[in-house]
Amino acid sequence: MKTATRSRQGITIVDVVGPIDLESSPALRRTLLDALKTVDRLAVNLTEVKYIDSSGIASLLEALKAAKQAGKRFLLFGLTVGVRQVLQLTRLTGIFDIRETEEEAVNA
Image 1 (cartoon, rainbow, N blue to C red):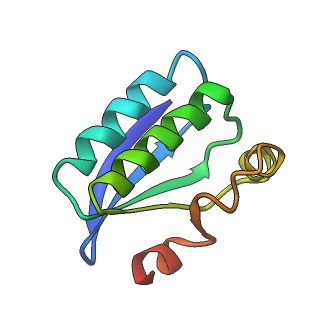
Image 2 (image 1 turned 120 degrees about the vertical axis):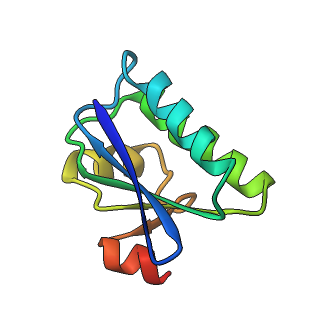
């Protein structure tokens, strides 16, 4: 898994490429929590993530919790079929602020 962070119209976007699993989720967790220290709005681009396991879900949940506690906005967008299925199976689609496209996330 690789990540890259960029800004667009006042929102910070973390682009994630590759599977989010037990090996890669700690790095994603650090990236998201570090970004939340300096921004008010954070969106995670999952268009290039075909697989996510429970440790990846835990990393996203930890970032969401940190954002809520700090009064910041945390969004996910570009969910692939595999990622969307995992979030649906775990009944987390209603917990996360999920947008279809980057444009929707930026304008949310």
